[in-house]
Length: 325
Image (cartoon, rainbow, N blue to C red; front, side, top):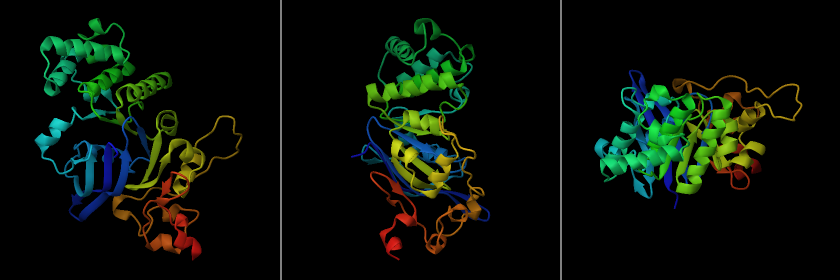
């Protein structure tokens, strides 16, 4: 059984002109110790999926369908207080900007100790000892001294390490990492990626890594889910999706990435833009931009279906009936 199971998740935002469907039937799962990368353009629904899983949807957004199960137990229908008890203890979160996750008025030690004591029955002294241990584990030099520093006294990369330590306080089963390396320079990105992989290996923590950077995904993830207009377009092992993409959108996405050692005159260009929530077309939402579109794509919405070994794509070209027709 998968550690996290998301099944047919729907998220809506009510407006005066009716409800806007922001996530439309998202299904994915993450196993223990696995890194699932979630990639796509801005507005594809990546961060929204993560927010729905940890119960931090911005009002008036709400889950209107589907189920989210953690270790076999539903968590999408829990009360605010019940979800708050799970958040931090079983699900940790790492956000893009560490300054939004850390209180500038408190030392990092105070923030770590308070978080630890909310979730674990430890004395003040024991919690401080664990906080120092965690800071050392995420690569903060001289943690016994730096524990009493304020967030502004750390560099961007070191602040992100503190945020990772905060996410690990209660040894959660799952971490939602939303663009954890975007604000960092390339060398620091590599260190944070190596750190996330180490944590998965040593703690058996599952990670949902949300990013728009395929380089980060290729380096870190075991599997990748490609999202488009609030749906999963393709999902499979990261090497297979990167080297042999199946969905036309993924093919375009991979073709738009420059490769070292490949001499090409022109990169692939995906014509048009992703539709707004109030303008999503009938059938496959990618059909107006798709080079392989045919009649069925414009009227019928495809679900994820097998598209080669271990991979699935929401595309009618992989439907046996369509091929026979």
